[in-house]
Length: 273
Length: 243
Image 1: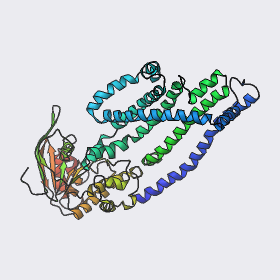
Image 2: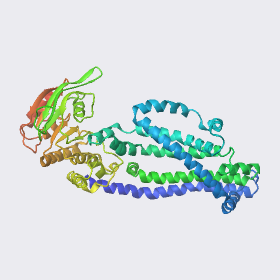
Image 3: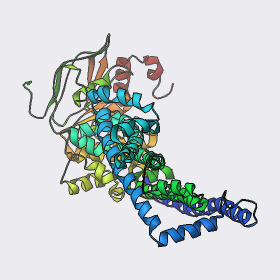
Image 4: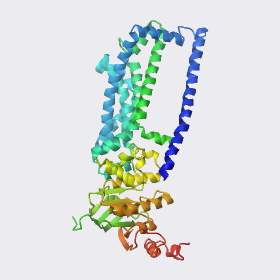
């Protein structure tokens, strides 16, 4: 029957896809490597002043030195725990409020307008106010991260729930699913792609908040490392800090992509066709 | 509520308005135990609205209706959850009935696609899964809202044949909303014509199953129904089959 026709079709599509994908990945590495090589060459040739921008190899050597004496690890751990705690607080708030606004009419009326208004404020501009409210200590940094992560997550949870096909909810109703079962089987999985998008944006916002937060009265963290290095004109450490931020962003993105591929396996079929 | 036979589906004086437009203006109908009734009507006549009301999807309708608790709905679109594998879609809302779900899938010829994602199936296959999902509920009554309407002509014929087989095996009753007179005559024991918000006509279809378009009596019934639906007889009546 037609099922016999469809199954090989799908496989053919996969067969064609795998080699093409690999080639594309390999190609995408070329230009970054080329830029690094040019940078290295220019620095060694003396075209770039060392105190303005040290060679990538020098930055890596500094990184290795700081990693070996444990400094880098300590600062990294401090930054990571701030990001994690802030993300957790902002994320839970965003999930709860976003779900309430997305699912309930009352929640929508009560929660969404103030959130929409607050969204217009760039959250980094709240730093002076936050310092007055919670001081310049650890809670200020965590609050800043929580604020930065809240908005992208909230909006994507809200939109994810709102965009669910009403017809699927109806079908679930006719299958005898009650409210909670509908949320579990239809709303939650249906909002998941949106949630992942929100999470990705939120993690980006978390690093951004951290960069700003850690430049105010901090004794540790990657931001502190960079500020301190600037005072002593250690350009290599400053660039190293940038490298670390970039790597963190990259790693979290890769991690999310892996999670996403697992959780949203049902979409693979959609992409293949 | 109504003094009907156990297992009957009945509606009394069902009304539904959208703003100033009264779509249903007192519909009465009964679908007996094991009976398949086709509900015909032009587009906008309210036949889908009536089916949605009976399916319990329209809280704003008024009137009395009783639908057996064991009922299932098949829509024009398959309405499968894309994030659940085929077998889990079939088993939605029927816990601990894995074997029954597998049997239902086998009955629609898709036993080997149980672990597939809906996105990997064709339109006809998806609609067959939707029927399996309905069957897994062991329904007394099926509510069908143009279930073959979105399929290509060949797939539609195959699905109509499948419906006939499933019906003779399970003996469920069904209310089949359709705009296709041939489909009504192929599948139903009785055809109702919805017009002006009421059941305007009722035509018994006393033909033996399995039916075919070229069997004796089919043409006459076809003409009668088309007539009732307001399609000029000259269009289909002058000369069998040709325009």
